[in-house]
Amino acid sequence: MNAEQQLSAHKAGSIADSIQRQAFRTDAVYDSYQDAQASAPGYDIEVHKLNLPTSGRGVYYSERHCFLEYVEAPGHCLSARYPDSDEPRSIGQLIFIPPGFELEWCWEKGVQRTVTCMFEVERIAILSGYDWRWDAVDVARTFDIQNSYLLMGMRKLGEEACRPGFASELQIENTLALMAVELQREFVGRSAPVAASCGRLSTCQLKRVRDYIYASLGDELSVDRIARHCDLSERELSEQFKNTVGMTLRQFVAMARVDRAKLLLADPRLMVKQVGYECGFKGAAAFVAAFRKATGVTPAEYRKRYM
Image (cartoon, rainbow, N blue to C red; front, side):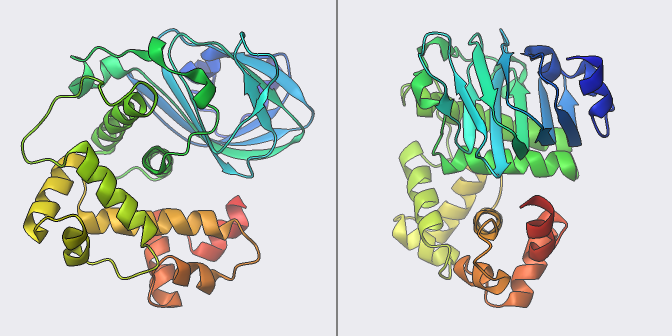
């Protein structure tokens, strides 16, 4: 990173010492406005608005860290390739780089808002005893990850970095732990060594619950309705879901509605009240109140600020 890039960073703080900056090399000049950062010995999470005045290239590499980038908006000017591939491939909303893999980034002129995260699974306490097989990842599938759980996790990490709450570091570590397991399941296979635990949903049960919730956000989603769909009692579902995910079922549904709303707000053709209706809110006032509680801004302010 050259001096001009460092001087152009907004809210620099520890930006020059960031492990993300150390892992990325480029001669291109760009502006990186850092909205937020959350760092600890095992991870570094950053929220940025990137102003890319010209096309450019850069190389990312970390021997120990997993890397995830979630492109909030607008998601149209990035591409990348691994050394053994021929041409750069377009980047989707979420990309993953396993530890020990080098990736060449390419970009066109434009503006983007991103949430980026580097973390070491061995330093996330509850994961230190597992054998992580990142060398088995099929990197061809890492450029555009269609996994709602990982997408939701990145949004949650970004919001926690922007608005840290009670026990924020613990919340981040728990989220990263679940995301690391999900990455292994997504790219290595369901045989990844994850310890079984009493009082938790199985992988299939959790997928069934999540899939049903995301498919039914426009409807009324009571605990009873979800439980009946999953052949569980309300008590079983409520207790086992919280033990598995770390939040109540109602909290998860509320977060999923807001996450869906964020995506729909990117479409300028939709009025704010239409977005609320599509996400299952009973009225405009309820939508605005829930969205403000979750993000700190109204839906209209979010659309104006980030889209």
